[in-house]
Image 1 (cartoon, one colour):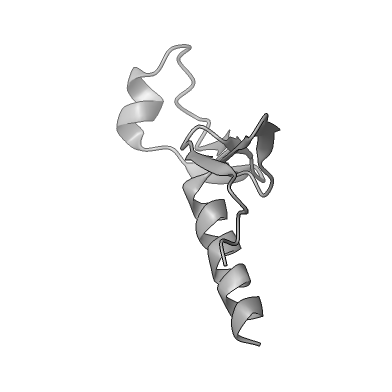
Image 2 (cartoon, rainbow, N blue to C red):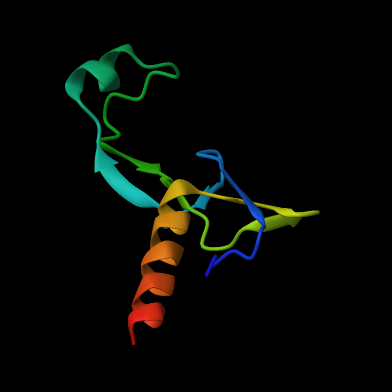
Amino acid sequence: MDPFRGMKIIESVWMTEPGEPVQVRRSWRERWLARPWRPWKATKMITPQVPMRAGYQMGDAVVMHPETLRQLKATLAQEDEG
């Protein structure tokens, strides 16, 4: 049986959302050569992009991140076995 019931699945690596901000150390090169010049500021905050947990439905197609699709297929296979 087709787990997606004829719906077309579109994978997009652009389906991301901002994650939790993380503080990282700046290298000396970055500290001395960056604009604006702030050599005494040793850390910076970055916000990593993480896969969206949901997908968007557009007509008969669902758009989702490849990692989310992999998790969905694993969940469907596990439910199909049990």
